[in-house]
Amino acid sequence: MQTLSSGYKGLSFLVSLNVDRLMMIAALVAALYVGSYIALI
Image 1 (tube, rainbow, N blue to C red):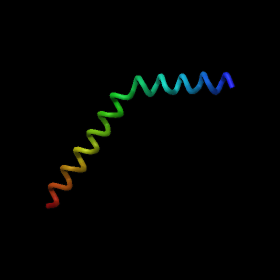
Image 2: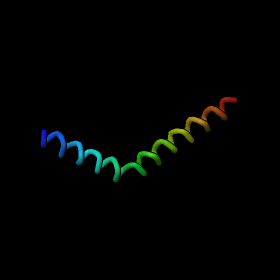
Image 3: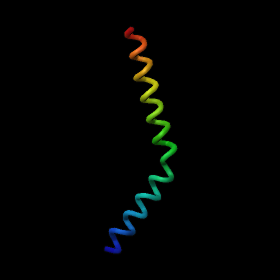
Image 4: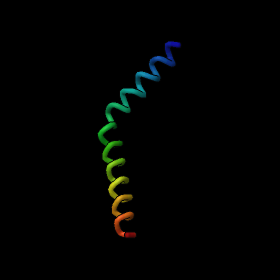
């Protein structure tokens, strides 16, 4: 159980470090999707 708890803490630490990077990727994908949708109209 201790290993599971420390693994979860490590994973949440990595996610908290990279949350801005994930948000930037999501924004880029959304912008590309919207741009391609507008180009089709």
